[in-house]
Every structure is written in C-alpha cells, then in structure tokens.
Image (cartoon, rainbow, N blue to C red; front, side, top):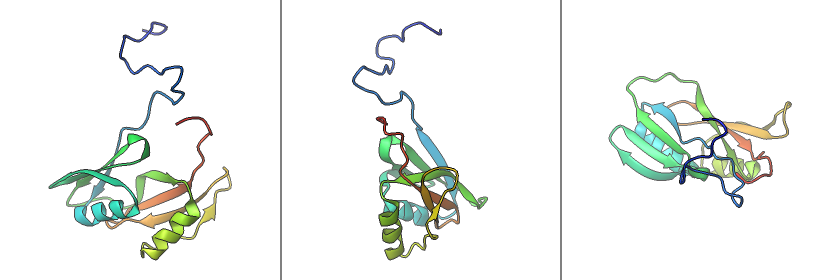
Length: 138
C-alpha cells in the first residue's frame, strides 16, 4: 500500500546506494541463426551466461540479460532495444576492424549524443549510442 514502508529485505534502497531501485531484467531478440547471433553478441562484448538448444542468454552492464530465442521465421527490422557504450568512436573503430560494417557515426539533433548501427547475423539492426547517463549512480 502506498506510503507504508516495505517489509524487511524487500529491495530497499539504502542511504549509501543512490542507484534507482529498478532496472531492465531481460530483453528478448528472436533469431533464425542462433549460433551466429550468439557469436556476434560475444564478439561485441556481451558475457555469455547460458546456452542450450533454442536459447542463449548474455549479460550486460547492470545485470540486464539479453535472451536470444531461436525461431524458424522472424520479422526483420530494428532490434527491440539499443545499446550504450563508454567510447562510441573507439567501439566503432573496433567493430570496423572486426568486419562488422557499422554505419557511419551520426550526431543526434534532439539530444547531446551520437550513434551508429550494426546489423546482427539474423538481420536485426542494433543501434549503439554514446554514453549519456545522467551523472548520478546507475
């Protein structure tokens, strides 16, 4: 109920922990090329945490998990998520050297950051943004 303190152990934010109390737990991307998509996610820097036939799970900063699920037919287009990196230009250069063919970096007119896009093996376009965190603990 609103206004009542949370029961003990209920994910309370302490005075020392200034991060928001919520984060994205899981995002899902369907692929018809699980092995290739999984290799791609490892190549770009995701930490593999689990894989079995039909599914692969990767960990990102903050504990978010990307869940790749294998489907025989998928709808191509933009990935249902985007990613942020500390150094967009260094990441672009690394991806270029790995042969991932990133798009040119472009400035975003509405906010103060830049981005580029990369197509993963199943055909989804993933957008990579420069770090634009608020400056508060996240």
